Image 1 (tube, rainbow over the protein chains, first blue to last red):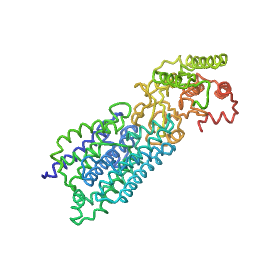
Image 2 (tube, helix red, strand yellow):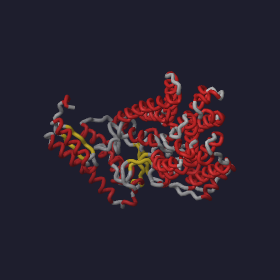
Image 3 (cartoon, rainbow over the protein chains, first blue to last red):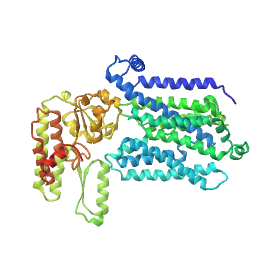
Image 4 (cartoon, chains in turn green, blue):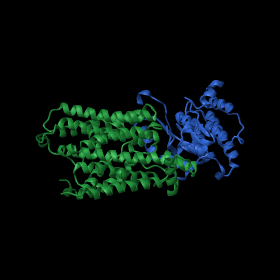
Amino acid sequence: MTRHFLPGFIIALGLLALGLLVAFTVGRYPVTLAELVEVLVSRLAGRATAVPPAVENVVLLVRGPRVVAAALVGAALAVAGTAFQGLFRNPLVSPDILGASSGAALGAVLGIYFSLGVIGIEGLAFVGGLVAVAAVYVIGSLLHSRDPILVLVLTGVVVGALLGAGVGLVKYLADPYNQLPAMTFWLLGSLAATTVSDLLPLTGPVALGTIVLIALRWRLNVMSLPEDEARALGLATGPFRIAIVAAATLVTSASVATSGIIGWVGLVVPHLARALVGPDFPRLIPTAALLGGGYLLFIDTLARTAAPVEIPLGILTAVIGTPFFIWLLAGMQRTWS
Amino acid sequence: MLALKPDLILDVGSVNPTYISLADRVQQQTGIPYALLDGRFEGIPGSYRTLGALIGRREQGESLARNAEDTMKTITQRVGSIPPDRRPRVYYARGPRGLETGLGGSINVETIELVAQNVAGGTRGGLANVSIEQVLLWNPDVIITIDQDFAANVSSDPAWAPVAAVRAHRVHLSPKLPFGWVDFPPTVNRLIGLWWLAKILYPDLFPDDLRALTHEFYARFYHVTLSDAQIERVLAGRD
């Protein structure tokens, strides 16, 4: 069952473009389309703008970084989800399955508990995610089994539960006036405080991980076959598994460190992409990246405009993603093959 | 708790039915009297009177309650001359990025709402997170915070630069020794905190000597005599 690539890709690209347009023009602070164009044009041309400094501030320093971060995080989670769904041969897999989110969560709440600055909190979250997955992988490899994938998943679930207990303990010990609300808000996911300086530590790992996954796109097709068949086709499954897990974990940890825990994007968007362009990975990964960016852009725009206060992203992605996913599951028998 | 053998369990804070039933339970289980007092700002005099009666120090409780009432009356009377919509618009910034705030009626901003306008007061509720865009839209005249890092960095942060309070250098760091004067936690220190707030917001209406008031407050409520150096340290808002 093949689909033509181009229509699906154009749709995904169009959704991202629409998401960017909406995200830049819609917001609590009124910015008209004319003012937006004026600011961007004058920035590119290097001349002074005619718009009030407050508007220029909002576009370049407040909304701009947030929009870019939303697109990057959405793309990163979608790509990681796609890679994992192929690697684990299971459509219910999300990027959290190996405990990256739980490890990042523990790192972040520890950072908040020890009153570290924002850089410290994000750094600990990033490191926490990487260390958690590394631990899962090491433990999983030490347990010899004919099905390394299953062992990896089970180890991920177990370690994730342990890290979750650790998060609960830190929340219990935290100061209820200051630290606990900060931890709770972080764990629900938000891009509210994104600044320009947050973009560099996000872009680097996301770009690196995505490039690696795109480079491995043909191998992913083979990896999604059962272990014996993949080996029979001459693919060294062990090293490629490590590479795919490492790349996907890199992008996931960087995203979670920036935005907190946002679920459902890595689970739902790969299915959407598959419905558009089919299960072939060279087509799937770029499409998923574009769709993921557009999807999170729409949700983040909603999170910051629906009410004067911020609605955490994790809540919105769950509320929107769940009925969506049920609808996809209804038609899944046909597409997952 | 039983091992400590207290004569009284004292709890000051929310008095909604959940906490009342919890208090009843603990009292039944342990047999120790459990006193639950209202922690809201208007409840402070009443709480002191009740506490004085409970521990047999009525006169002291009465004197502290009277002092609290006098403070509230003096300040609200002087501020009363200014109609509510002409009062300064204040944004209460919590957290290292200053993006957590108290909504209308929240216990964290009670004293602010008593003498000024809370920019976040349009929505009623407790604590909430907002985006910088929302703060830019509100454009407060004054920012009150307890976070040292935020207070130090906000004037050099380009995203906050257009805010009226930042441009006018009206970002104020709340004293917090031994406990916060506005929040962290919201308790009796809000009495001297109310003087501090009033002086910041209405310097012409409140020429009173804050140092003398601080000295008197700590002597009366904490039985501690502060040196001048200590008063300076407290008023500077550092740890």
